[in-house]
Image 1: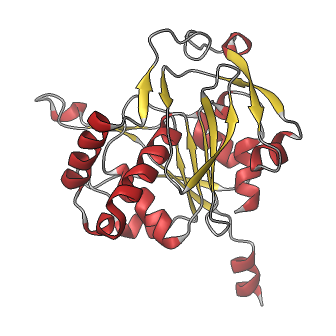
Image 2 (image 1 turned 90 degrees about the vertical axis):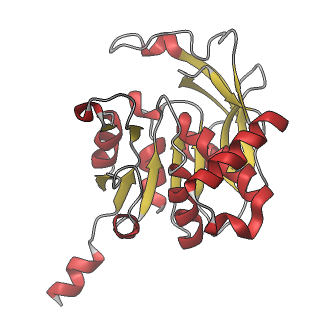
Length: 248
């Protein structure tokens, strides 16, 4: 009975995806995986266990993914194409995903590539995925750089100015975001200068900024608990991450 109780009380393990900096120069000690403290802090506060995903020389390990109950794709400065393999694994295993800022952008790109490549995607190498993305980017870009952030990424955040980095978003009724915030309008921290212009059929758009920029997406499939937000719930007392973990 004691063993059964231990299994029932097992804490959720949330795999956190890093920003990869590998082979950017000739110094091997500059090869690194970057994690931001606020993400595991929020996971711990929600009663779960964060697990930083350390790739094998830039390639993801399936054994490591099997340890995770869900995945958090944080904000960052670059999307490595190996991250789409993590998303494919999560899709195939129906594991929850939360994408924040760059994480949501990766989810949007994945959804469009998945739509265009269909069943071939699972067998594609990272190099082939990259080629598909490069071609897609030329023909019909999913992401766009903002020439003038206009309140989206115009503030350099520090520990005291988060209120200055906030703007309102309009939330769709019946969405998970409405469940989280209990309202159809919320002020959120915005730090991005890249925006999502389209998503594939895996997602529906559930929040916009007043200027029409996409601020949140949710999976259409009710068996797939995937949420993407363009804003940053990890830098405030925002309850989004905790509510997402609570539903896993």
